[in-house]
View 1 (cartoon, rainbow, N blue to C red):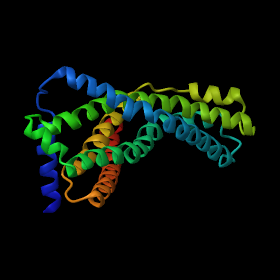
View 2 (view 1 turned 90 degrees about the vertical axis):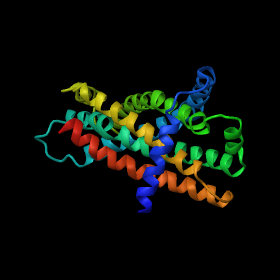
View 3 (view 1 turned 30 degrees about the horizontal axis):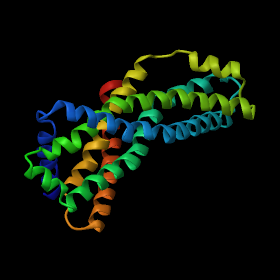
View 4 (view 1 turned 180 degrees about the horizontal axis):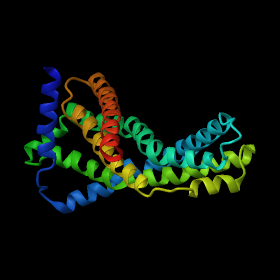
Length: 246
């Protein structure tokens, strides 16, 4: 029953979040601020993770490909499709759930226990919309860009690993990433990214918004937000894969 109560409170909060903003100009500035905070500041970690993911996929595929009848260019194809279909959206989403989600839950939770949210409500401001909506919009707009960056960097990381280690020639790898390319894979990955962006921002914000107690409870709400959003990302990954690729 507690789970149902939490789900109900979440959707009630989201109804407040997506209500009509009082002043669009203020929200516009907030969205730009959140794009920098949640999106641009995450580019570095996305690039680092994606390079190593692409490299590991390429090297593991090469070292496990012992059959001489299988052409080596399929290693490039495997690295490309792995990044496009799964790693650039889901794995990066999980990383952002930890980085961005904990930040959002802590920020809003701190505002709750210091009564800043109560002060906004007294002034007649829709605190849920003012604090959470810009974060959701920023993530929905910028996370697809992070996913595209991850795809490109991951494929490049695979190429670099193949060439540097001598596991594969540059010609074979490049032919592999060009072979039998399906553009819908990018669309599929971006659709997942948008859904994950909503989860990454709204779920930790929910736990932070309703936190009670002191600093210790803020930390616990941050942990709950990250764990719950990570589980939901994996759940919706299965659902969206079945809906879009089946």
